[in-house]
Image (cartoon, rainbow, N blue to C red; front, side):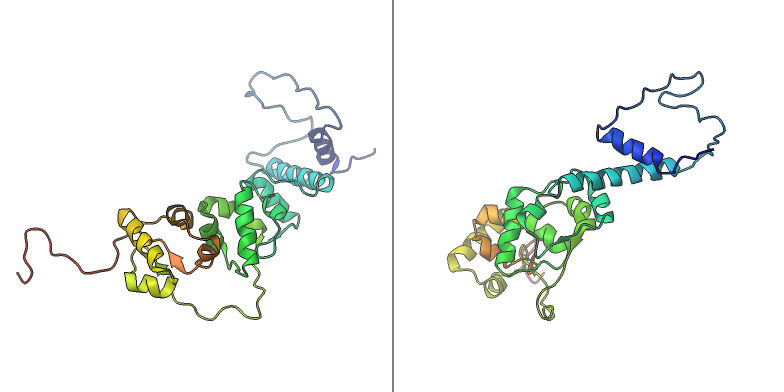
Length: 246
């Protein structure tokens, strides 16, 4: 008796998913079975808790994505699952050498974000890890985590930078420290202090929106500043109702 190859079901599902053959009609529901459930074929036993179906579904989705990528090499990935499958297929995005088209293939990446990444690259700045990328783009940790299977953070200088000073806490540092480490003009420093007094800065995007700083200057601060909330350092006033020395 001729035996079917084990890949037949997988190939059939791929052809159905790509519209090359019609989907089979659903068998009638039998009494005692929940909606969507079908009896096992004769002679086939199904053990409770078997995960083979889930594994086959993963293989189908991965092979389907591979087929789509062969047909459309610039395909934009739509979901975190597609990112994971693309990584399993061997695709990678070199963070410090990627083009705008590369970035725009990631789910949720906007044209403005892609252009910001290109300007960062053109300025000779390199991102060392997910935290740098998140801080530059001002996106959620969840979004960066979804992209992470595809991201390669390669360093292209002769050597990584020497030990750097800890990031400057822009919401807490005193005026003199801000002036020394950020290199701002007196007018920009004054505006920064005024805005900080109104409310703490949340991230790079908030800083840019409120101060209207040149993009090149803002990009040079990546990894050099942090945004912990809290009062700025300075002299402490006595509590209400108490006099100094008592």
